[in-house]
Each structure stands twice: as C-alpha cells, then as structure tokens.
Image 1 (tube, one colour):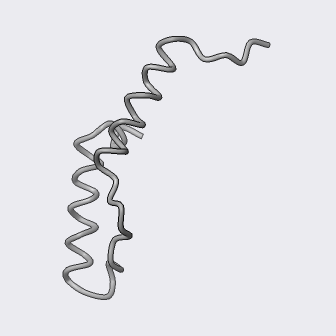
Image 2 (image 1 turned 60 degrees about the vertical axis):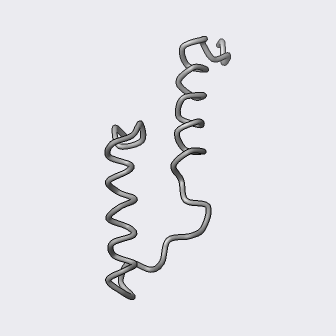
Length: 57
C-alpha cells in the first residue's frame, strides 16, 4: 500500500493550510450564547468558512 501523498494532494493541503493561517482567529471567539456580540462573532466566522475552502466540507 502506497501511503505517500500525490502532488495534487500536497497542493490541496498547502492551500487549506494557507487559508486557515490567514483566516482562523488567533483568539478564541466569545461564547455565542453569552451575548449578541458573541453570536455575531460566530456568525461572521461561519460566513468566512462558507466563502473559503473549508465551507465545502
């Protein structure tokens, strides 16, 4: 069994890694049920996910 990644697999991994490094917040999001601000922060993050690579999963 060959467990090595194909070049296109490695390229996809790099694309996802780069997107996540550019878009994932460095600080934890506030609790979405504690405040309107927390809810809006989660909504904004979900919008970012849906417009990026990760939303496809």
